Image (tube, helix red, strand yellow):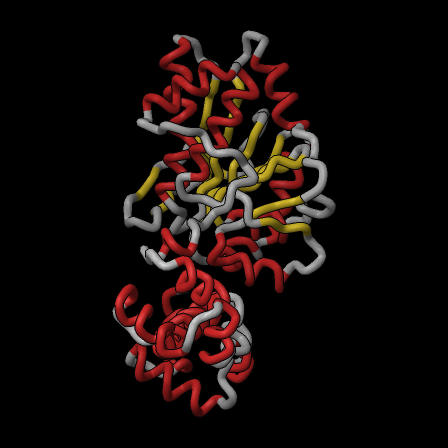
Length: 338
């Protein structure tokens, strides 16, 4: 993996935290932002203040225009100011949900984030906020991470950027997090680096969080845990299937690679997955296609190829059979939601 980048932002915060002034953090909320990741990033700051009986952290919420923002769960959240009115903060955390490009393409957001970075703020993101930082040019020459579901889209859109599938990444004055509960781990690391290991552990205890995960840990669980399969050979086959969705491998070849017969593979799938191997393979390819239709503007014929279908007609027929609507309608529905 190579040498980790220096955590300049955290070091600077640690120095500031030793003084009497609290660390000031601004959360920039996009429409439909993920409430879980936002709460996981903010609440450790509150608990750190309570346990230390000191205002170690201060935070404020803002939006692009200063108006309340509705989270992805439908809950409206009031903010204190607009992004343009934001000044004198140490960290900025951009919280973006399922439509990162719609929010991230706004040039006024790029300008304001670059302004804050120019004035010394460390700029960060949770979940799909990484797209916004990339669009603003703040990730050039730095490593970053994004939620695993959007990793492929991110890599294709920004091929020159260094990306990883880690939980979170600190690289000098920029930090990114894949979202979900990983935001809690990231902030606990921030507390630990800034105010000490004991306080970070005490905060984790308050959340019934037995272990603070390291940044380089994988986002997704192992195949055996993800699909609840007992057979290591079945897990191997599923892993091979997952990595070859664009060019499906014949079942007999998969069986040979793990040293069992085709009939044994079929039996393992039926017993432990409740579905045959061919249907499972097709299901995963179609699920990938649905994600690509919702997240990218690739032509449908290219989506079909990327998901291992030899013709658009075959793909459309299989897609409609699985999801009840053709790929063209899926894309239209997605645009309507946007």
